[in-house]
Amino acid sequence: MTETRVLDDLLCFDLYSLSRMVTALYRPVLEPHGLTYPQYLVLVSLTRLGTCSIGDIGRATRLDHGTLTPLLRRLADRGLLTLDRSAADARSVTVSLTPDGEALRPVFHEAQCHLGESLGMTEQQVRRLQTTLHQLAEHLDNPA
Image: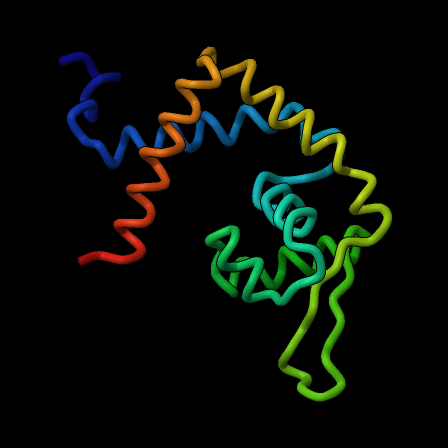
């Protein structure tokens, strides 16, 4: 076994290294806009969910509160989203895209196209892979 193949029998390593490689594919599209991959996930979630709670974004992105809160503050500081506290309950915060955040929609589409081209897979192969990954995530979220 060569040194570069020493972890090939570990499924966890395959998933980890593939995740890092796929995330890196987004970098050339996102970096010019000053966005990280987790920020991209939050912004795309907001384009699909509309105004929502921090909890809704956390569930959609699978990012924990400790990661999400500073990330949201940075995006709000950049003017890409707003964080509004409820007058009735100061613990409740709603998140909304600003017009500057909405203006990034074409970038999100470009990122998806770039990923699709980079993977070298047919759309059918991608959908099959996604189905398998969704099934695995569902199983881990709801173990029998």
